[in-house]
Length: 250
Image (cartoon, rainbow, N blue to C red; front, side, top):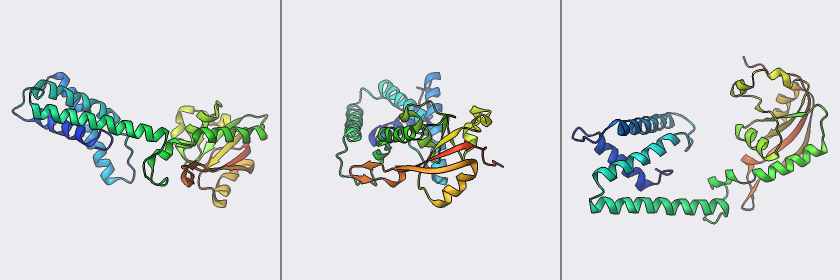
């Protein structure tokens, strides 16, 4: 409801129920396709969210698209001549546009009275500066063997590779099953690594150190959002030399 906006979501639920009712004869192949693409996805992720520990708003993205097409289709073919339905749909679309405009403006220039720690748009900020500072650290420690990149958070693997502008192989050292597409990871042996760590600790250092000939701390990046340091997206940067192999994945 939050992503689609509440009124549009209610319209989707209402028109879907009407379309699926035994008295309805509006379901052709196209409509059935949209229903099957929307509702099973929504119900699946609704269930997995209810019983699981993590939920991401982008997971049911295909359902958002098909549900809005479905809503407009049933509104146009069955209810567009009814004044109350027209007013509701205008209000729903208008609310959706206003909410999206406010959120996009806030994303570029935060202004809503939300504390930095609770503002979820903070996850979009700071990556470009981190890439710049990371490149400066790398420039101070050139490697004749070439670098690859390690992080202990999947998002940071992708963001640091992108925002440094370097064509590094990026891996999550403790979730190697995510990188089976790279196939022969032994080719990384002997190379040096830029290690980007969230929530750095001596215990984490000791866990990573055996995979390198040497491992040294070279810097720290504090991600600031609206004047506040966001610990969850701040990182400590290390350089590991002569990568000696991957951890045992058994």
